Image (spheres, rainbow, N blue to C red):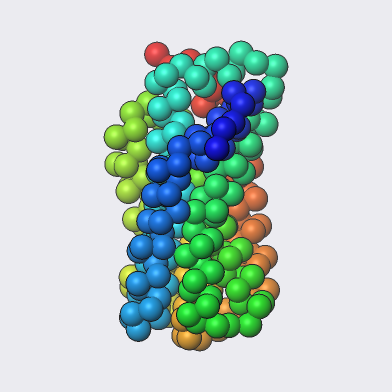
Length: 240
């Protein structure tokens, strides 16, 4: 598979994703290798759903954060900033393209999950949209982290500090029926809707409606993406 030299920053990520065959094979296989055995194992629904959520969160956050910090160290972002393109547009393209590429990686595993655990089409759609919302949120976190570090190693440290409380609030590995302030906080974390959607796919009722899963995380992601795009001038500025 051959690609022309990228003439836009976002095309670089697409070219890198598809041009290296062995790396592409690994990228497509590792979600399947993790998720499919869990889906076929008879593991309790809340834990199976948590595995898928964690895979999506990690793939989105570390992919965006490490890619941007590497390009920052290589001077690519500084050169991109010298082009006539708006820095806000560049960041929007980075978010959108990376989230779509992450979904491409996870989609084969998700399709196998839907075959092993058949649910109505509306729930398949809701679960897929929820996973995509999680990927967009994770990429937003990765871009945000890239504003404060030029070290790919530090991305892991900062991401852990941000993701751990969000994962906890989402309900992946704690009380499945929060009340009070924890219940309120949970409604603002897109990861929570992925958790609810996948629990439903695995046969555990959560009380969350498909329409809620389709709308709420999408709105939250739009707000997060807008906020992260405001950091574009800093992200593309030269660091000391």
